Length: 342
Ligand code: ADP
Image (cartoon, rainbow, N blue to C red):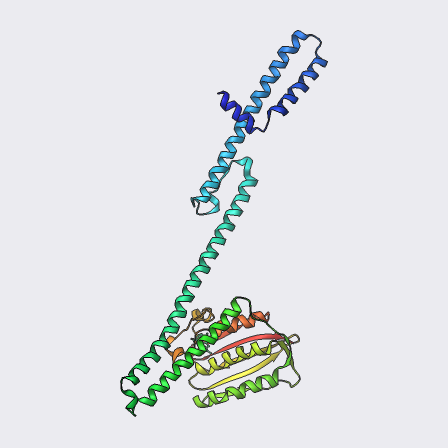
């Protein structure tokens, strides 16, 4: 009992020194008020006793509350709670209870975010290894077949070399895209923004890509914009964006046309790349910007796609404070657009 009393007194934070000073003050006060010594002593004893009882009561309450908090903290540490509503402290501690709930929610979302990052990292590594393995195995296969005698067979030797060469090109595209994406994601991509003449710039890119469209029999149309229109951005990085979007439009269009145009409003120029191609299903539209996501794997690979193009496009457009918009209808065509500041 004495031990419990002592513990409760300690809990109530009344340490011996302070307590003695308190009692001494009371004795002095009482001796001033009460004349008869015979009354002073019992009053002092009574007051001391009542103080001890009161302090013991406060100490016990405080211990109960501390134990409650301790059990909540250890519950959180041992993952006993699934949601913050399960964290309940007594009504005197509502403020603390709310703080603990907020801390719990924050910790939970931080852990989920870290788990998601870890999952993405593992997935990315698995994808990269898979993407690298395919062309390397193919090149290896062609070279081995050639070495085993096919080199002297004029019917296949050139064809095998061309195929091996195509795979080395795919490999080099993949490595370039991987370098870009890792630079972007590690924050090492240095942007250099300035105003540039968009009409001249787009005309040059279109002429560069025209042979690819001609080869597929697709019309590539550029609608010239007023000659002195200047837009603000990083010309080099945007080049990659336009090349990716226009080659995709050509790649995923079997017949018809690819159009490039600019719509102006007082503050912005919206650049639109529109095709009459295979289109993209509603549920795939959000996913095509994910690394390595392809709607049709075989088709993308056959066209030399890495599955990283749109992920890079999205990063670069977002670095310009803009957002890439997609409208598409299956079998009818797609439209990719984003705006740049005037
Ligand atoms: P890829 O190298 O496979 O082309 P991207 O990241 O550039 O990779 O594009 C991701 C996927 O989005 C493509 O595999 C394709 O399925 C789809 N896609 C992109 N552009 C178009 C388009 N203009 N029309 C239809 N599908 C498209």
